[in-house]
Length: 145
Image 1 (tube, rainbow, N blue to C red):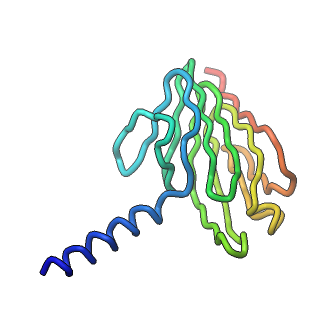
Image 2 (image 1 turned 135 degrees about the vertical axis):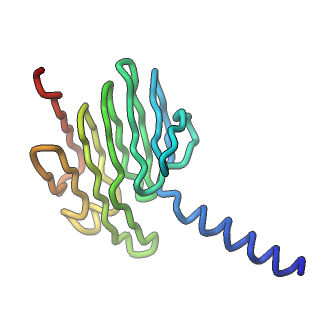
Image 3 (image 1 turned 90 degrees about the vertical axis):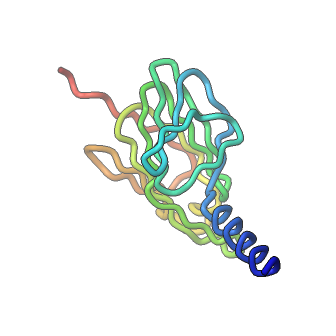
């Protein structure tokens, strides 16, 4: 019985770890992460998972490093969704799709784009950008009211 429980717990821990695709490295000001209907205060060292949404306040900024060494930084008043992320640590093949609903985003692409140019995409309310280079900036203005 104990052995079965230990195997179950180890498998559960491995499944939970497998969901971690990156880590929050820096936080400034008001930043939270939305995951599975919960709002979590963002802190350095916190794991990032597929389907997470990073939200920064008026004074907020967040920096995230992903498994392929992609670096993303979102500035004040940003809403960034991590829509899809897959990365093979052996072949460096993968796919990285994110959506910037508003705000600003600076990116230094990692091994996924080096292996397969165009494997990273950033969607905005008005366009989809396929990333073929290594560094870029995106800004989505809020509509005038």
